[in-house]
Length: 334
Image (cartoon, rainbow, N blue to C red; front, side, top):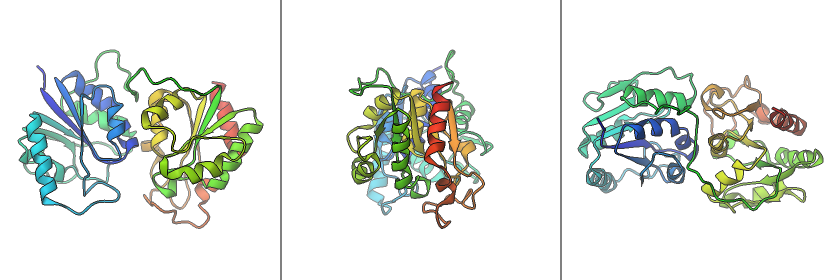
């Protein structure tokens, strides 16, 4: 029996949304319609997920990294929008440090009859399925376990990996090439720009064409990193365009940020410059060949710091350009 219209919620960044892909496909296999409730930073990623029929965008004041003040009129407007969609059921996905209960209250007010979420806090009447899960599992598996607890299973033949809608747009770039993405949404997770620039030089010396990518606000960074030997594409690609670009790459060199998960979603190997401020077991690129670089036992380990708390950023400055070249060569030789 179909679950009708099911709302899947994940209200933070694009990478977090991409990791919900297996959960979404499981829900879509048992629902007539899937509406994805995303924050402004994640809405474009939600539109890339197979199984999503519609995207509802809302800036959540208890999830977003730069929250707006709580506005009763805005909460009421969201309640009205959810009610108008005729949502029968909701699956609220959160990270281990986020609570699903405020959103569950809003959804109850909107008339949603059945709500499932992972919650360590007593939910009262806010949740119908209160799921418990080991936090030390990859985020896509954590999310998929929530879908299963809610009664949704992946369809036969679905391998549970990340994915995006296809076909992707054609890319006007000659190959073979490596993509280097120097930016990160959290500064503590970024490899220093000078190291990135040195890696472009080292990759070019090894015979690689290097495309340097970044968002509209990162043009100065990408220009400095690309130098004269890389191709500066800073601010030139939408998220869908980035997916196509990463799909054509031999490998992607990137920190723990959205494009790492986008690379995994298109099946491209990743050289992961991973700062251990969050655990790699949860957040490393999922389901693709990966070389993890960075000192995972550094003093910043598990601090969830947004700015590096250790002078010199040793967890990532310990990585050399030669390490990156060796990692790329290892991945492309597999």
